[in-house]
Image 1 (cartoon, rainbow, N blue to C red):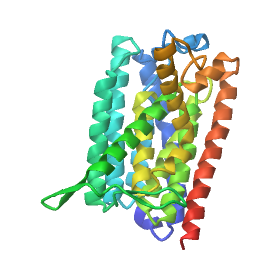
Image 2: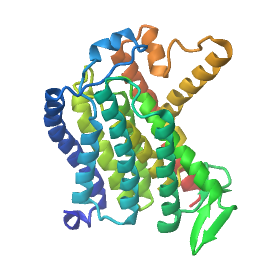
Image 3: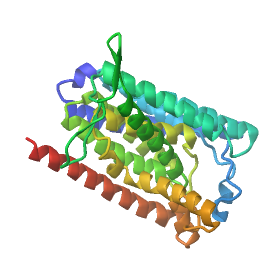
Length: 344
């Protein structure tokens, strides 16, 4: 199908959003029936908000359908070059990690899943491999830049083995970025429609940046995942019929981080995906402060639960967080393009 629309790249990106959304809607309905038949449902945290207890047993692992719909869309519409293969590989491998975590929770009927240490180790391995292949396979420069500031060269400590470059500082930076973004999106996935809606906005902005850079593969990649999130919202909107689980949230967070690397928006992505950063920071601040003082700064972390505890309805929290996420995404988009225009 790519050859039919190859002369209209803009149409390809928009079409990837529409096709992925339609496929996700079509795939997720039957998937919910399978999960309900096999009693594969979410295990709600005992220490979570009391208003969430009714969600116990709601089908999870909806991320499988998000990734499936997006992958099929890419197979149909994308030109399939090295760039897309690497982006999808990192995303799917992280999705497999999330699936194992989700499956262990369901089978063992607890909220622990894969141990945090094991999960983080695998995430770092995926991130390191992605970074090294991006540098050596795609020719990504080991540099980091923020709009209006000088470029920071993280390739100054590079080891070359048989023509294969290992930029140590950049590898460390990318590993922290990818693992951090993956876990940040995972922490955000605590309310019906919250993660799917905010990820959708962020990926659309990242796809627009990729398109501006003539990176059609990356633009279709972002568009397809954003479209799949739109389709998933059909079932994930409050009250949710299914949750994406770690399968979806970990993979989508990795996808955002990977797109930031290939488009060289590593630092701008922290603004575009600023809501995820704030959610992760709220957990880190809460844990650090509680260990020192045995007092809590927030009524509950991540931050979205704090506002639930203050009496906001789940729908109000989700809608307001969507607005915040959209505003941050637009701000990051504006900073990136203003800098790009000034450098023309």
